[in-house]
Image (tube, rainbow, N blue to C red; front, side, top):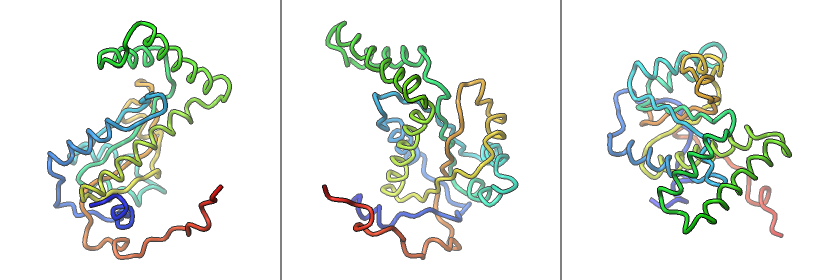
Length: 217
C-alpha cells in the first residue's frame, strides 16, 4: 500500500477488538521502525514503555481516570500500548553515550570528525537550553516525530492506532518511576485492530483544504 493511500484511509481508532493480537513479527517490525526514527542532530531524547499484556496495560490504565476515563477502554482492549517518554534534560552522559554509539557504528573517519560531532551537538543543546530557554520542548518535539513515524508505519502494516494525550501525567510518573529515570510522559499510542462497533471507522476524513494551508512562494 502506498503512503498516500495510507494517509487517506488511516484514522484514529475509537474502539478495539480485544480478541485480536498483533503478530509478534509485526510488532517487532514496528518497534524497529520506531527505533530508527530521525531526530534533530540524532539526539534521540526518548524512551518507550511497551505494554503487551493485561497486567502491563492495567498499569497504564491507572492514569486514565476522572476526565481521562474515556481512554481506558482503548488501552485495555488494544493489542499493545506504547508510552512515549522524553528526557527531562539532555545531560552530558547522554551526549557521551550518543557519541560512543556513533563511533561504534563507524561514523567518524578520524578524531577531528568525532570532535566536530561532539562540538556540534553540545552547541545545539547549549542553544536550546540557554538561548531559546526551552530544551525540554525541543526534545519533546523529537518524540512527536517518533509518534508520527509509527502512526504511518502502523497504517502501512494494516494495524489500527490511537494517539492519546489525555492521561494523568502524575499518576504515570509515579507508577513507572519516571522522575527517577529522568523522563517525562509525552503521549500514549494504542495499537491493534478496530472493533466492528468503532463509530469512527465509517466517518469521512475531515481536513482543511490545500488552498487554506499551503502558500506557494
